[in-house]
Structures are given as structure tokens and as C-alpha cells.
Image 1 (cartoon, rainbow, N blue to C red):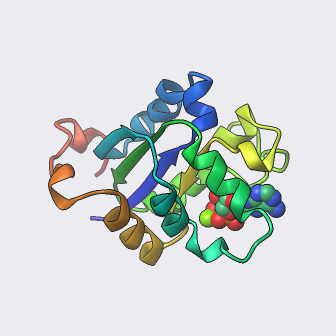
Image 2: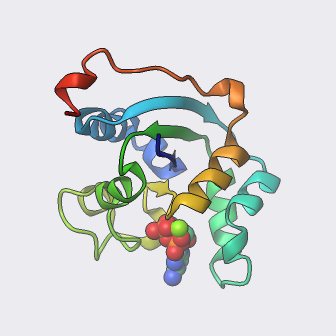
Length: 149
Ligand code: DAT
Ligand code: MG
């Protein structure tokens, strides 16, 4: 079953948006299989954003992620990787459609509320980076037959 890694960033945690953000993925029909609030180490933040190491915004991005706790999550379901990216919206919240998380709550690319894996390979590596296998639960929604044919 397909899984993706999502991280509610410090701005969204500080602004009290954790519940609203989780609710969007729950009501869509995806299954939450891993969840934790944590203060991110510089080492983890730098590993997570390693592909952006040479970009001018890298240091500021790392400072932001370590500045206050985040909520790390793994969600499961057919098509969850691409669907979560749609629910999240465009990287720059000013370009994100209303109805998306970034479109509804943000106005600045450096405060864009949430991270979501961008493909199957990054999803697998980010899940492994952020969660131990025993921190993930394999379970089924009891109402799954009412969500998936
Ligand atoms: P996304 O988070 O939509 O996958 P990304 O992987 O291109 O976007 O960039 C990772 C994060 O880096 C992004 O969420 C916010 C920050 N970022 C990206 N482009 C930026 C820019 N031009 N200026 C400042 N921060 C930027
Ligand atoms: Mg990205």
C-alpha cells in the first residue's frame, strides 16, 4: 500500500493549525499510520533537505525547521503521494489555489506550513529517515469498504 511522509512545519504548529491540517487527510479517506511531535535536530533537518543544500534559501530553511516543534506523519492509501501534494498546494502559498492548505493559510514561501514527499522514492527515503519501523502501525479503517470499492 502506498505511503507518504508529511511534516506540519513550525509555523503551522505555532498557529494552532495541526488539527485542521490532520483533518483534511482524515476526511479525504487516507489512513494515518505514524504520528509524532518532535523538536528537529540540525542534522535531521539538513538530511531531510539535502537536495536543496546548494540553494540560497537552504540555511534559512534549516533554521526555520529547527526553530520550534514539527508534527511528522505517515499517511497511507492508493494515490496518497500525489493527492497529498494537491491537498498541500503549490510551494509558494501566493500561487497555491484556495482550498489547499498553503492556499488557505499562507502568503510566504518561507512559511508554507507543511511538507509532503514529491514521489515514491522520496516518500520511501523520508519515511525511513523520520520513523523507525516500530513507530508505524499496520491497521485498517473499519469503514474502509465505505471509502474504497
Ligand atoms: P515543496 O515543499 O513544495 O516540495 P521544494 O521541495 O521545492 O518545495 O522546496 C522545499 C522548501 O524550501 C519549500 O517548502 C520552502 C523552501 N523554498 C523553496 N523555494 C524557496 C525559495 N525560492 N525561497 C525560499 N524558500 C524556498
Ligand atoms: Mg519538496
